[in-house]
Image 1 (cartoon, rainbow, N blue to C red):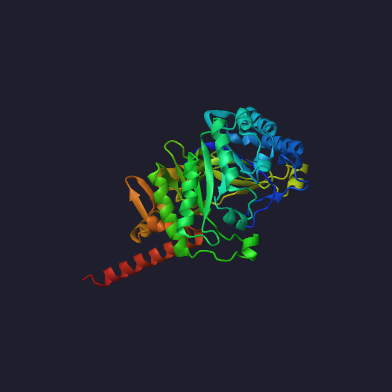
Image 2: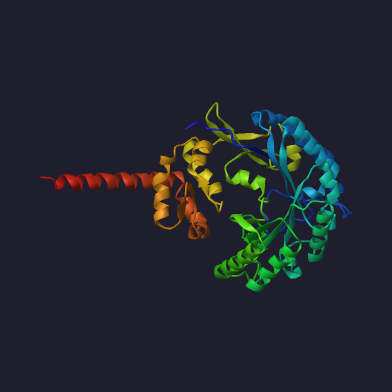
Length: 415
């Protein structure tokens, strides 16, 4: 099947935070220097933005003439940078690549006053969506997570977003926190919904390798069964308030699903600029999909951002797993034609695996769409393993042996 050019997005990474959270495995670094009223003065703002613009200019020719459907300014804490710095980045992206008329531009921000600028200024710079890292509305839970903002600061930040006309904002929440029970998890959801967000992201606390929590797990972590109860109760509450779940950890009001998220989960393309940023690009001419990766350490990135970009073609045998790793997050599933157009592979290369998973109750077909069942979504990692190259090859071998045995048995029973 021919590879078709999918939509194109842009991810821009800002690697600094006021403090590194003990659960975080992102490429982020604590800023150094005395506390100030605004964190932007403690990051190398001008030098880093200069590096971002060089990086963006060097990667712009890879766009294939496509305008950007979304921009995500992530981190770290991008709101440590001033609105003027954000405007420089967005103006450069608009000039180098181009913006779709309805482009979504998201800025990640933390609620604390030293971790964010003025939202009205960010809106004037071109931001039209904000993702606010609330995590919890319980002061003790926030302390256990190493967060430096208060529940009250989250409430004030939400008020400022509404006042700035940024009604399209997301609240990040975590559950499965130390000492948390179902009632406390639902209380967090209730307080979040009361702030009038358009979108809620709801993640279970996980102990990621290389983090402080992985080396020193916090005490009183809830059991998996308790976490499952928290999730069920939370889903019921957000859906009762008019939100629809559209992917594993995200819920949105009508027409407010994140365009940038959906581009990831439908195996779209994206340029990745900034220290440690990842990208994914389709080249129909060579029938290749390429992953890109920038240098992780910010000082090295600023020294030579253009030359440091690493490219890695994705082998065709790896494409089914990479596609499913994204697409199976979608609650509405995907068309099999999407698999073919985004990977260049034929559906029959994975049809037997999908049908086998359907027989086990892990995948289901709804009309012309395929997706994970509720059971499959709960055990998504186990489901995804079946699409790894080694597992597919073993499965094909078992199927071939089964066909040989069946043929032999038929010949023996014939007169």
